[in-house]
Image (cartoon, rainbow, N blue to C red):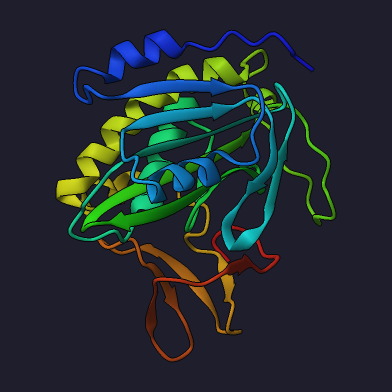
Length: 256
């Protein structure tokens, strides 16, 4: 376990601040959750753009309320908060996933709607929350990535970790690669939506051609994503556009 991480906060600030003059980078040794902290600040009226990194999270959260625990050096956990007002929020988590995966490694895949995958295992996750005060919207984009091996914690499949893909890559180096491109991605998403990212997501889509089961029990075959980020599922009756559902992949070979 690395207890003396050297974070590239100044380099990230220098890369981002010309386009976001009020942008700051904060590194905290420990917090309950970076997303929770930025949502607290937003509800108190603080809408400044900030990248908040926690070396340790004591109450990290994933999608659907799942917990994400992290220790120093084992994970990269951070949240990007900034004012955001896209015409359509659909597909933002997919665009974020595209940016992170492209910044880190060609072998990283994307599992709709918010997971980074490698070799059939979850490498990381994305959690997006928003706050609205006085008509202004603030987006909090939380990202957690496994850096070192992690316990399965009751999961059927142990998680993947980044150092298995690229040995020697630590959390600060990973953040240095992905932070500035992530900000640019979110800024590009605001006026244009998900459509410009559709082909890039398709290149890393781990569900396409796979048998999937939706949370309501519907079964079908994933057919990629639409221009609005909806998952397209071919069922026995129709091609269904899924905008919000938990998706499980049935045990079958790719392309089945």
